[in-house]
Length: 391
Image (cartoon, rainbow, N blue to C red; front, side, top):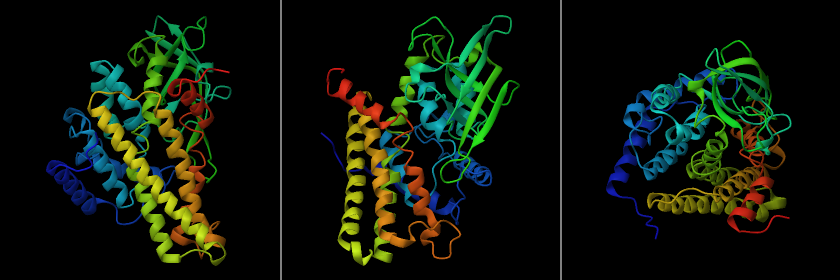
């Protein structure tokens, strides 16, 4: 049974978070964090969050958190996005890697990595995709070759489509450490320092022109034994836990989509809809708002189950398909309202909201691809959720 009422303590947490954010949030919209100009500005803002104890509210206090519940984390996310704050440049670390560090990391790894991650001293990127191994993660070819004299692994190969790799200081990724093992076996999950010889990071522009991706080449770079997460040749289990975080709750909280739906409704109130498409555009706005509400309710149901001891399983793939396709529909609804002004980008004289909707739409198009393509997720849903046979 799901209780939709907030407790007095949760209401107090919301009031405290709202008060701090409203008093301390930047007065002007921050430049996009996936640009060389915007990244340091966003990083400085996130440092302020950390110093005030709001960067990682659900973490233990010794790592910069507030030991907030999952409910309180959702509340904070709602308040964060409600006032128009951007996605976090530290999100690959705090939302993807950190849960795996808590689950699989040694005490020494937690103590060393988590405070620096929360304080944006280190920025992490995810080194999984390769030129011939994207959604087929088990097909990676980058290797870790044992170096007994140095006490670690020499890395060789290439990672691609590495989100924020152009700005990151660290990379977490899978490397084949047992070349004789079959596909899912013989992989190790390594934590790699990018500021060393043998690493070449080459930025790759995204569709919207931002340098949010990178190719990362390894030619003898070193990862010590202390950089192995979860055990040598046992990286697949760790990676599956990370993908659960990526597709499940943490990467895309409902607060982000609720705020976007609210902005969409406000856009309709401000500019109306094109006369030739008035009813269709209005319907698209309503459907987008309903989708955001449905996503929030589903998330609350999931948190209820987790609070009762359940774990996130393959149903995280259902979650990922829904939010990624909802994001596209929501932005398409905005472009439908804008009509002939939809293609205008930032700097154009008649651009509405500084061209933010077109930029958001272009970013949303990547949603069905990253975190595992939706085609692969539908296979997971068919086999592991619905129990359908393999073809």
